[in-house]
Image 1 (tube, rainbow, N blue to C red):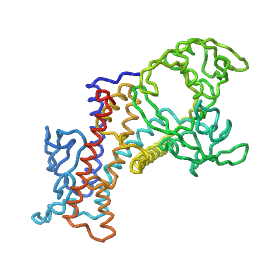
Image 2 (image 1 turned 120 degrees about the vertical axis):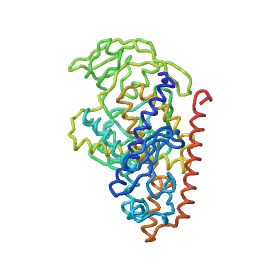
Image 3 (image 1 turned 90 degrees about the vertical axis):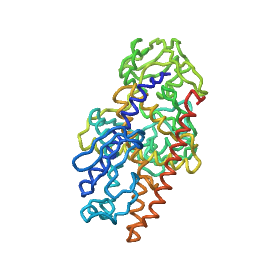
Length: 460
């Protein structure tokens, strides 16, 4: 198991994630507001007491505030940072024309929507940049093997079945399947497969699976237990025992100690039980069949019971498919698809918490985000930037929730105004926003306690 980074690195990484994302979010509000002629009285990164700032020639106070857990743009006519409308009876006609609340409904809606939309666009650009730089993986959703424990195999799927749909949603690659499976442990999904030219629908009961990353962080997911790629070596890990023993990229793994290899997932589970042992690996290389002795690595990790253990590693990764370069247009399309899939899974998770399918203990707050920020930062810039993209989507998603005080709450007010043909009363809006802010603060307190309880110092 990899040790978590130190406190200084964690705090630095957290600020490096949250600061720019909050800045970009609020700039979305600010720039669209300026486009429609709305004056901004204050632009703050953080809440609470101002630490330092300056006032520009337009009268906007730009500042950094003490609590770095968000930010706000306070437009002219706002009573407070939550954008409750203030009494404008004492304003001159010129001053009133620059207030937020006198603007047409569609302009106010666009100003509010601009914040989360900017976060979403940033995430799309990040994912698109990765696709443009590294290309896309082209692979068919064909079953090449199963893990030792496989819900799909137990339900009746067979090697060479091609999955074409999950619960009626068409899939074209193995990566399309995850959004319909991973968030739903405990449910039964209908897999439509092409089997020898026939379409067969197989119901699969998804069991809970607890996964841990290299830092010991746990997640509760569902997994079909399918290998979607042939057992062909595509990459070697650093200091790979297999590479040192003479195996090569392109070798097809056939057996380990005489036991047939039925996909990479099953191989990994078998190898994990033999740390430090020397095993005989049988591979096909072109027309040759070779047997190669390999001394497995012994890697410290955390077991299913949460206790330290040691597992075996061969140090190989499968070839997950062909890598094809993509142009700018297709990269953007892939960025949109990945962002939408991520938001879909976030929505599924929130829905499961409300329905009782997931525990509220799975909710994370600022401490957990800081922890993950430091861990991803320690892994390198690619992992860190990808994490920034995920958090940017998370900010967009949360801010679009229809809770008064958040952007989604204001959009809900505007929807009601559109239906009623007149805005809600100022007092009604004020009380709704107060209630919403109280709810958000209570939720922040709850998830912060959740985060603290999950820390090792508290036995988490």
